[in-house]
Amino acid sequence: MRFMILIKADANSEAGIMPSEQLLADMGRFNEELVNAGVMLAGEGLHPSAKGARVRFSGASRSVIDGPFADTKELVAGFWIWRCASLQEAIDWVRRCPNPMPGESEIEIRPIFEADDFGESFTPELREQEARLREQLDGKPAAS
Image (cartoon, rainbow, N blue to C red; front, side):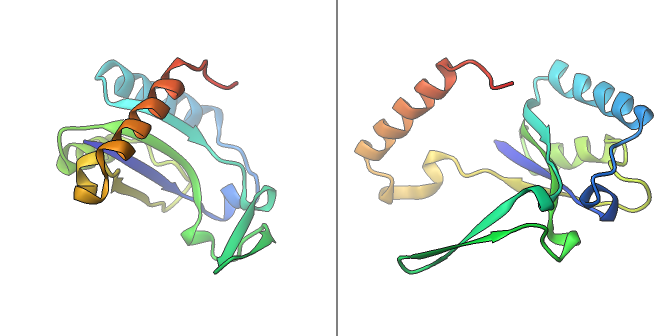
């Protein structure tokens, strides 16, 4: 099973305050453990929402909303993609994680949909298209 691990933003991350050298070192060690255990598939930190935008959909209409976004506790400061045997395994890994923010913080764990989760709606043609796209993605070099 794959999981997206969402590191929630706080006032400091939204203000663009960078993590300390100690936190970067601690997270580096934790990421190394995840990679060595075959758990971590991807992971990145995100710039503050002030540097982002949202696109709101209403039927065929689209509107762009520039950041920053108001409700800090609903924003994401970073993420991982992990492969774990179960939700409990993902929880166990998160419990070992260094606190990503000074003071209180929250990390959310969400299962990622797999092809079989979509049932009959995910037709053989759609499955073939998905497999082709994943092959293309796997063949591309990582962005820097």
